[in-house]
Image (tube, rainbow over all chains, first blue to last red; front, side, top):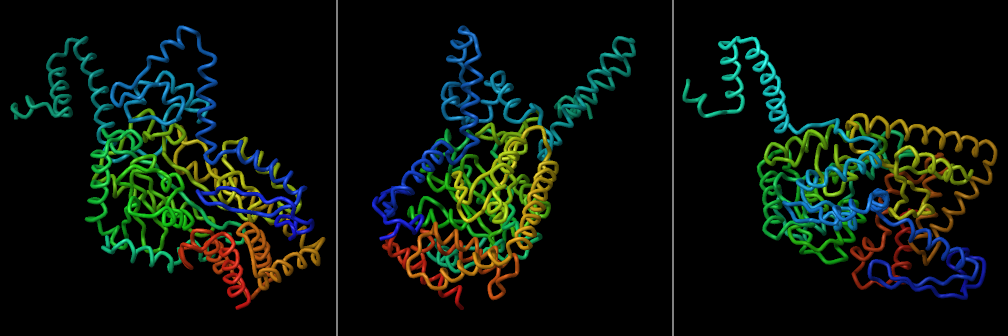
Length: 178
Length: 357
């Protein structure tokens, strides 16, 4: 039988592989076997989801540079919501819940810089969040105005601004006042 | 949403052809398909890998409700993955409807929703709660984005996504955080492979923030001269920019491939024609053929169609054939008991019938 890869030389080696839990055999010659194994090795070192592996590599690299005390602190780092430890995250590259982003923030920022070259989201904002974000921004703006009014002793204006803030926040007192 | 049992749905999927296979999209002579997927999670529920059964069920039921009531999902079907055999799972992977990660995972309440044209697939309880994916023919990332953005808006009307102002859409893996968007194009680059330019080109691309993969994902470069290119960065760049950049990179590669094709056609026309017709000859007469060899030969046949050397075959037929000859698809078609050798026989028969028709 001719080699199934080059179809030139006589096949002298039967290669058995388990792919997706299924046994597969191919008949190949010595030359191709050498090539095949060197390829196989590169395939193995280039695993399926290279992004995740890149990530795990980065995670370990970042921590290598850390101080010893820091390393101990890292060991105790844990998400208080889903109980995922930072150590577990470092091994799997997967976070457990959205709160992990808060609890591990300090560690994640250098990672974001390496992975994305950036730490601030740009792009789509869900419509529901849009309302919320605008509210927060508006309240912040009004709070500054309020401080300004108080410092200038314009108390009547300050009271109006306070009412506007309460209204945006949906404060029940504001409803009663109507 | 339509109601059908799993057997009927699978039988229909075996017979159906996805819209992306039609070979009609822009620049189809180089770009096989474009794809975008969005990763989304629901607020206050742990990501699937850390969610308990009740939480996974909750996610599933929330999405089920979204799909059931919205007319935009009228022509969709839902299949629960937990009821499927490993073979059926693998078949769906080969059909590009689900990810191989999704097929391998074991947790309950994993489901996927797909439309009639198979341009849309929504995976529920994958690595993230929701993965929306759209696939279409040729280079048309903008059109796909418009479509998938609308689907995302519709889902968001009923569920609150995990999102914050700083990191954007929060995902299980930090490689997806921000837009949660992965856009990709599948390119057929036979001329760049022949002139030995493809390696350095792809290396250069991977240095500027793009991920290059073979047809099967695992650095399988030789497989049918097909290369998938996708964006790596998801944080700090908008969806439109991501698409725009990927499109520019793709156009650059397409341009180089087309130049290489012209050069080959001018300099070595007879050799090129010989290569293509030999492949045609093998495909139309072989009795035993492995999927690896078939992919290689079909790539040459595709090249012949793209160069208009072969006229009695078209891209649509080729795209369909590439799917049909995959191991799980063959077993779905001709019986689960088909071992590797019998598959090679069956594959050769199938190809022979199609090619010499």
